Amino acid sequence: MHLRAEALILSIRQHGENGAIVRALTAGHGLQAGYVRGGRSRRIRPILQPANLVLGEWRARTDEQLAGLTVELIQSRAPLFAEPLPAAALEWVTALAATALPEGQPYPHIHAALDGVIGAIEAAPAARGWAVALARYELLLLAELGYGLEPDRLPEILRVGGEAGWADILAALRITGEALEVDILTDRRAETLAARARLVDRLKRAVA
Image (tube, rainbow, N blue to C red; front, side, top):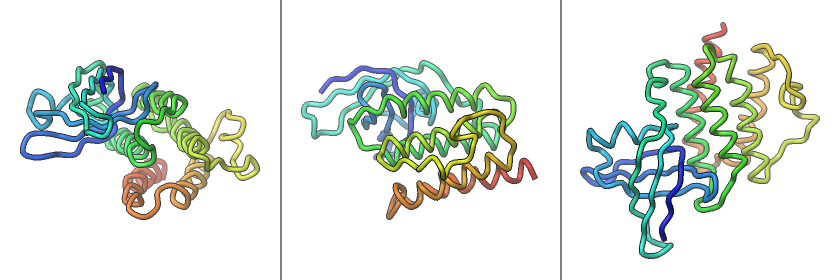
């Protein structure tokens, strides 16, 4: 196996004293996992940040073996983690993809939606500018994994778009959140919902 592609970092798990197992999402090859030697070092650790865009190179002798991964930073989102709301949003959207998607199956629409919502979080001065994009990302992920919601269940902002107030946004997030909890984030994967709960709680406090 040899793969070289741009990828969005989704999750990092320490492995051994110095290494890290990284899960990243590519447009053409889906979710890919790899072992980064020295992934906990001062030089590489800033690159292995959720939501960062990297150029990854995966190498393995067989398809069954965990690939070795080297990364080059293309775009860092580290400054966004200095703000509580953007940090919570980035933590959630990357954790959702890392938890929900099977490895090695391309989901170009999900990749594009994740890239779009990360870009919206990066560009918008306030959470209202990206919260609708986040709800649409969740809705798309549900549909791509075979759990699409009936249109008559969806609020107008998810069906036709347009301007949305916070009541509409929180209603949309409640509907997509319930579907994620019932259909995708079950059993051990339910732990991921804690990141979403933190985000929604911060959104509610921000607009209270």
